[in-house]
Length: 211
Image (cartoon, rainbow, N blue to C red; front, side, top):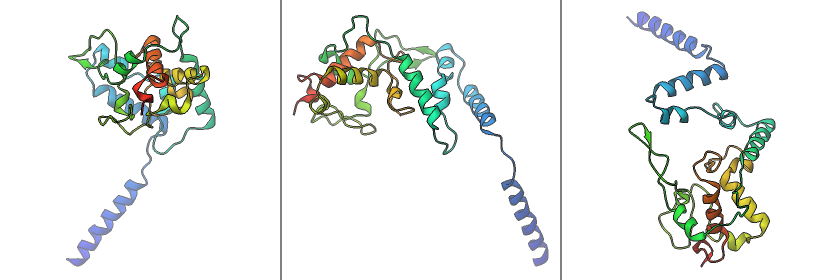
């Protein structure tokens, strides 16, 4: 009986070893399989189907396993991001901080309900989901860096204003493949809305910059 059990144990071990040595698909094949699984897992409505298609930057950033961006890939993402940035027709990059304050706390927009996009005149930015905002606010996130005192610390020079606008429009222009949403490049926020966010962050009268 003991001999039979040892034989079965040996066969099981050899089977595990064989399974461990099995050949898996390469990265390109793995990507195709994964994308097919995701696509088939969602209902095929226009609203959802559009979100399943990755643009070139997303394709570069969607690494498999622990793979890292190469210098060439990072440079390509930055190049694409910078090319995506559009500025308001007015040419003014600073809007109204009060409107920006509302946008920073507004999480509505781009939600899919019954296969259709939520009807909204304008989406919110929901900065509070990832960042600390005005001093004393408690319903804020800590995924991203604190924005409290943003303008106090950095000032509101033309260079800082332009950087802030571009960072909000497409953060990948400065930090390729970062977790910050590309709010302007994806069309979630308009250039005009982003100018209000810039004002909220840089205007000395904004609660962001009050102690």
